[in-house]
Structures are given as structure tokens and as C-alpha cells.
Image (cartoon, rainbow, N blue to C red; front, top):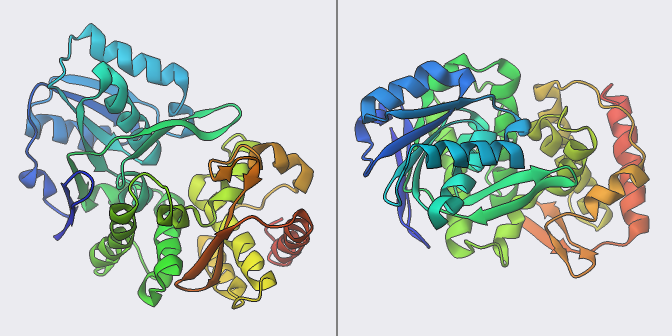
Length: 346
């Protein structure tokens, strides 16, 4: 079992491995929010910790809506859950984002524990305190920083994942490798739910995010690096109404970011990202004109005043965050489309 600790701004443990439920300590009245896809594991959590109040939801980006958020708040209120309650959140990235935001806002804030059941949730959504919802106008436009009291990643839960879902979550780990310049994280090939090196690999990826978020928990500076690949990725997700899964969208966004880095005189990282895309083997995208993405790009959270800042890799471990001229952005997008056509992905 891998054990990590977050120290700032709120201390909490992160456990990754098998048998993590034996390590959990939860206080106060307990409520369980879970993805119905992992109901068997969720009920195991409920029984182990004595959670009597249980609400199952359909996962996916549709769960991160104002309507579902209201439904969960009403569930807690109708059962009279008090301020000292703890919310147990079991599921993938969308349930983790939703559950964290519910905990941040119900009675102005209650405790929660995260039990991530996908690779995406383990390496990204469950760590760092970002919570949130989507709006029709864009992804994650509603949210709050609210830190869990613990993250418990039971790797047995990954064995029920479809292969594509398992793989797409590792895009965020690959991204952490680019940010940190860690070659070990760039080698995703061969990883599978039963892989002997998976536990250590996931912990290594999480450690990158922990190091960054401890220095910049509220995303005032360095934490913006974690948005590498997300600017175009989020726009693609929103434009396709989330038909394109988050991990796949970020992989496409990483390819675009690599092209921006090359245009700015950095190393050519496109081959590295194309290798990742071949391993993912995603469905082909429909062709989307640059102009059709602009409304979503202009609502990106990394905007400062009226200027959009892009996270650009110049080399593994060397990134910049800066505005870029529209001409360069459009040229890179045309090259991105050309490369995807060559790969049969557009």
C-alpha cells in the first residue's frame, strides 16, 4: 500500500492500494454518495463504516449539473444531516467533483472522504480540493476549494472498469510526467488493473499533484500548470456536449499544447503525445472549426481580464503560462487537425 500525506493548506492522508478500508476513520453521522456503476463497492464502504444514509446516482458529466446538485442537497437536508456529518463519496471524477462541492456548500461546509474508483479520480479529481459543477456554457464554471479529510483509493475497484475508462484516466498521470519531467510517468504502455507496477505508478503521479497544490492550493500561480492540455480539452468536451470523455479530450489537448510549444521554439513533443493517443485508441473526432470552439475557450477559467493564458510545454519539466497571438493559435490548430487526419482520428 502506498501512503502519501498532504500537509498544506489542510492536512489529509492519501492511501492507494488494496485493503484501504481497514485504515478509514470517519466521524459524526455518515451519508454515502456513490456512482451506481460501483454500487457493490459502495455498499462495502457503507457497511464497513456504518453509513445508513445512501444515495446512488448515474455517473458521467451529467451528474455535475445544478439539478443533480440540488437533488443531493435535498437528500441530506431531508435526513437532517447536521454540521458534524461526514459525506462519503464513492465514484469516478464526476462524482468526486460533485460530492466535494456538495460538502463545501451544505450547511456552509461539512467534512468528506473520497473513495475514487477510477484512475482519473485517483490521480486528479480526488486530490487538491477542487470541486465543481458544469454549466451549459462550459465545464467547471461553478465550484469551490474544499479539501477532503482523506482519500482512500481501493485498487480492487479498478478491476471492473472498461479498458477505455481505465486508460483515459492515465492521461492525467502522463500529463503530470510532462509537468515534472518524470520519464517514468510517460511510460503508460503495459499498465492494466492487474499490473504489478500500477500502485507505485499511481502514487508517483499523485505525488506530483500534491507537491504543486501544497505550494499553490488556490491556483494563484504554479497550480495553473496542472491545466496543461485542458484549455482545448475542455472546449472539445463542451462543444461535443461531453460525448468526448475527459481523459481523451485532455489527450487531444496535450497534442495541441505540444504543437504550441514547438511553435515557440521548444522541443518537439508531438511524437510523445501521438504515442499516447495510439495507446488510447480513441474514437475519431468530428471536424470542428476553430471558430466553433472560441465561445468555450473565451470562458476558460485561466483567463486574466480578457486574455486567455495557455499552458505550453517547451520540454518535459519546462512549461510556460502565457497569452498567445490568435494567428499562432489558428496555425497550430490547423496542424493539429492535419496530424489527427494522418492518424485516422479526424
